[in-house]
Length: 162
Image 1 (cartoon, rainbow, N blue to C red):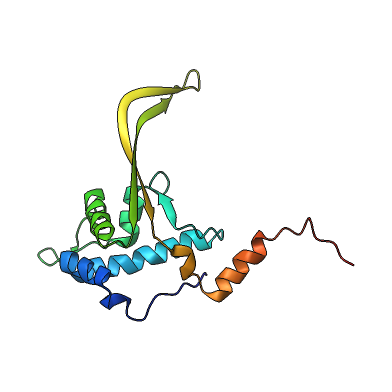
Image 2 (cartoon, rainbow, N blue to C red; image 1 turned 180 degrees about the vertical axis):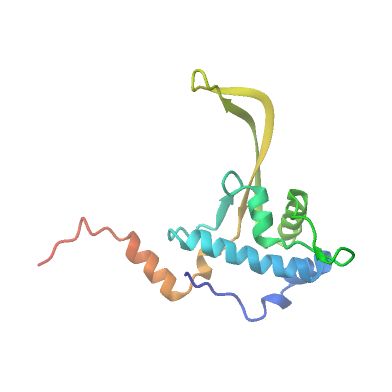
């Protein structure tokens, strides 16, 4: 488990007030879950860059299911359908406007592997790849996580004992 800091008044920041105005409590909760997902993903290998390209296995649908919750369907007394990618993209757009995240979009051609030759073949279709970054994410690591990361990065191969 990696520990990260957030300001005690984060919920009252202009960015979070913007998210709340656009999406209500659902959006605010999703921002906190987004931070938790990034903490889990980047703390696992001490990579605190805070950037995630949405591609398999960490796809748009994966992130939507991680941070957006299914609404309660009162009429049928059950949870509604799984969150849609469109809901995630709307949420990320709101966060980008609030400067909670930055989004980089790259349009690239889709290829498929030819089963006979094993070569990648262009399909003629394009896909927009989205990279989500939480600015200043590395600075949110607490002292313990930062020290642990620095120890892991330090090479023991070059050390000598005297």
